[in-house]
Length: 260
Image (tube, rainbow, N blue to C red):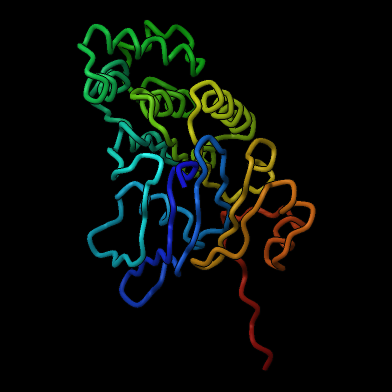
């Protein structure tokens, strides 16, 4: 059990009568890169927000989320970092980049501002931000979308978390920048020994670097396993259809009209 960073048992989330997640059982292993795959409305982001304690007040949650490797409830920012789809909304527009990246290190690692700022500049260099010392003084609106996402990643790993959750972190970017961000995430989690939860609608993008994949459909976990096995021998017809089509899963499937 100590190899499990996080374990979900019977996790269900309802909004009114609608079930966003339906009795999900899933283990997240320490140090692995796990992709959560599914189309819009499949429950991917609900799962991520449930893990992070970011569900809205109206959500009704049942089941258990435990953290065996930690032996306690996780501390946001310290034990897990969260990279959202749109860094334009996750970054504070009125704070300089350096302050935003340094904050978690100062708060959770007991660093003073000078030490935290030095770590922030180092992290900006590691996420391949050009002229990191100059960028420390910049504001989010002065950066490109790809640069803002790199800053968001630097801020998310500032306190050396055990788990990095990337929720559709590449979907708002062009294909070239997507590949760069995936390469960056892959390198960072390897270097830092972090666990990565990579949430995406793009099974092809995830398949190139994750260890395991979990496929969701309308709130249910329909299949999970090593990525090579799932891609070569899917046990669920929905997974097989996704692999066969390679279609863009950001658009919900069309519903066939009933015959007259």
